[in-house]
Image: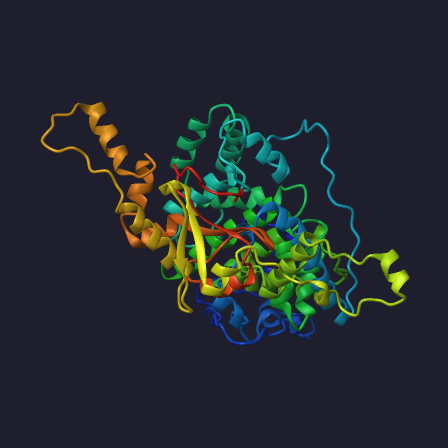
Length: 515
C-alpha cells in the first residue's frame, strides 16, 4: 500500500522497478564492521535505469574503533560540556574542509533558516525543533534536546510496534492520521494527559505515519539546510564514514539529539525484522525521503536517470547512517586531543606575542614547544594517585592509587563500596510508624537519597547510573567511559578534578551538562 505522506518523486521512481512482493523478499545486506569504508559513489554512475539495480552493490562497511579509543574510552558528543562543544565545532569544521578539498567539493554557502519572531502558524507540524523545545517548557522542567512530541510517538512505537509487520511501510488511514494531528495541535500543551491516552489507543501504522509527517513537516531538513547537501555529497568521498561523523558533530544539539533518537528507533525496528519484515534495506528506502528532501538537496533531477540515481544515493546514505549509528555521535580521539591542546594554550595564555616577536626578530617554530605544563600536585602525579570526590555519597578527595589496568568503572565501584561501609544502621526491635520507617530508609543512604542506595545495590546498575567526570585542567568537563583506563586519562589531564555524579531520576547531581 502506498504511503500517503511520501513525496511523489520517490513513489514514481520506486514504482517503476519494484515488484509487489520484492519488498519483503529482498535479503538484507550484510552488516559488517570491517576496517575500511566502501565508497558508495558507484550508485550515481551506473547505467541501469532500474532503481534496485542502481542501488545494488557491495555492502557498506564501517571503520574499526581507533586503538586510542580502547585506552581512553569512547566520548559521545553529549558527554562534553557546553563550553567544549562550542570549541569543538570549528575543529570539526576544519577537519571536514580538508576532506572536501581533497575531493574537490566546495562548501555550499546557504543562509541558515531564520525563524520568525512570532510564529502564528501551526503549534507542532511545521514548527522548528527550537520552538518545540521552548513550548515543552510549559509542561516539563526536565532539560532535554528532543521535543516531547517526538519522544512520545517514538516511545509508543517502541512499546507496541517493533514486531508489527510492515511497520513504517504499510499505509495508514488518512482520516485517522489527520485526526491524530489535529488532536496533537490542540491538546499537547494544554491537556497532555488526553494526548497520552490518544496515543495509547492509536494503531501503530497511524503512529508510524505520524512520525514521518513530523519529520517531513519541519521547516528545514532534520540535517539542516546548511549541511544536508554535504551529507548527500559525502557519498563521493573515500572516507565517507569519517565525513558523516564530522557532519553529525556540526549539527545543532536539537537536530543531533533528534536524529540520534530516530536512528536508534530504526535500528530497533531492523533488529526485529524476523517479525516485522523490515530489513535495513527496506527501512532505508522508506526513511530516505524524510532525511534527504529533494527540495533541500542541490542535485540535477532533470531527467529520469538522474532522479533514479539521486534516490539510490539517498537510500544508500540512509542505510549507512543506520549502520554507523553507534559511531556517528562519537568525538574522534584526534579532535579530543586538539580540544585539550586548545584549552591548554588558553589556560597558560601562550598566544604569540607580536611585539616580542618583532623585538627578537624571529618567529616561534612551533606553538607546541611553548607549552610547559605545570602540574598542581606533582607528588600525587608521580605516585599515580588520583583524588576522587563523590558528593552524592558525601565523599571528598578520596585518594585512589591507579594501576595500568584500573578502569573508571572500578574507581566508581570502590568509592561506592567505601560509602556503604559508613552507612548508619537503622535501629532494631523498635516499633516505628510510617513516617519513621521512611526516615529510617532514607538514613540508609549516605546522602539521604534512597534512589542512590537502590541504584548502587547492583554492580551493573551502579555503573549505568553513576559516572566519573573530569572537570577542569585541559578540558571543560567530560564524562569518562566506565571501560576507559584511568591512568592514561589522568596523565593527559593531571590538573583536573575527578567527580562521581549521579545520572538517575532523583540524583542530586544528575548531570553536569544538559543531555
